[in-house]
Length: 328
Image (cartoon, rainbow, N blue to C red):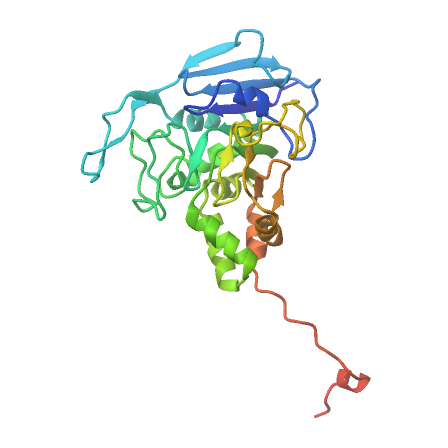
C-alpha cells in the first residue's frame, strides 16, 4: 500500500525544533498517531532534502533514526541589492532555492502528497526562506508576469503567472502531485501595515468599497494563489498580521503540551498575534474559517462568494392585494 507523503520546508533562521513541535495535519483534530507516512524534509539551512520512509508522527522531537534518503539541494548565489538600490546582483553566498521543492513535487506520483508545511518567515504575502533576500513591496517591484530571476531563492507570487514554474502546464504538474484533501499551511508573517489598517477600519466602519479592496489584497497573496492552483484550503496568517515563533517572549506563562489543537489562553504554539475579535469577524463575514492559533483558511470558493453583490431585500408586502398581478 502506498504511503502518503508529508512535506516540511524549513526556512533560514527558523529553529530546528520548530517543525517537529508545531506540525499538524488537520485544522480541527489531532492526527492518527498510529498511521505511517513518508516524510520529506526540505532543510534549507542544512542544504539537504531528507526522507524518512515509514515515519510515524511523534510531535516534539525529530525522527530518532537516520533518514532513509538524503540529497544535497541545488544552491544559487543570493541576490544582493546594488549600493544605489537600482538592481539586484547575484553576489551573495550560495543558498538552496525554492525551485528544489517545485521540481521535486512535479516529479511525484499523482495525488501522493497529503500535507505541505512552510516553516518560514514571511512578509508582503509571500513566504521568506532567506530573510534578507526578497523583492518586497506592494505592488511588486516588477510585473508579476515577468520571469523569475535565475538566482531568486524565494517563493514568489509571480511563480503563478507568465512562464514561471507554477503557471500553465508546469502548474498542472505541481497540482497533480497533491491529494484532493491535502493540508497546506504557511506559518510565517503577512504583516503589511497598510492591510492591517484597512481591515481594522473595515471592522469599525464597513463599506463595500473597502471590502473589495481587502478582497483584492487577499486574492494577491501567495496563499490564495496556491489555494486556487491546488483546489484546497491553504492556512496562512490574515493579511496585515504577524506571527510569533516563540510567543513566550510576550506570554511567559504559556506551556507547551504538544497536543493539537492547543488552548490559545494557556498553551505555547506558533501563533498569529494581536488579531482582535472584530478583525476576525471581517474574515469570517467573508466566509473564511480561523483555526485555534488564529490562522485563516484561504480558499477561492469563499473569495468568489464574498465578491457577489448582496441580494436585494425581500419585497415588503402589506396586504394580499399587493401580491395580485396587475391586469392589462
